[in-house]
Length: 257
Image (cartoon, rainbow, N blue to C red; front, side, top):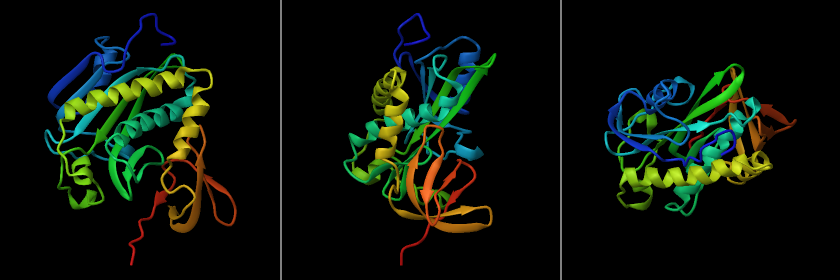
């Protein structure tokens, strides 16, 4: 890959951990201790302190799901391309899941995997910046695989088993996901890779062209989802065109009558 003298492959080595606080924390510790580099993947059967977006905790039954963190060398990317990397990881996860789910699969901005209106997986990317250079990213991915019961707070969650009726071997699936990540990461490294990734992302954007209810502060309104740009801004229309930054707006779930 660009920025590295040694050809490495995402998913090699593949480290299988029975229990860990968080695969993202563990991967970052290994990177900072110079015990791991680009491509190293860390899979856990159980996370005791799994991390989700916006400081939320990622819930997962032991041995039931796919909990994976991968180290990525980002030194040949620009600091402003952090969302594009996030989109590439989301697309890799989409590519992987689309092998098993043949319809209703989308990416909900910024990087959740949805089947219909239910969440099948999520992504958390944490960055290492040194001397003003974005050197590495830890891409953490959680996908519901064999779990069939979820807490009320995650009642809108759905697993691959619930969708297909089949049971899966999560470790094998995690290795398949690494192969998908390798392809998308290589695409990202090409000269026009960033634009290609964003174009592909918008093709599978959740609720694109549909009217949704969004809340900003204490007010909410209905907007039509348009697209997301390479900086992660969500563009909507509704009276006047607007754009939102992740963390400044909430989706309002409306129960169908």
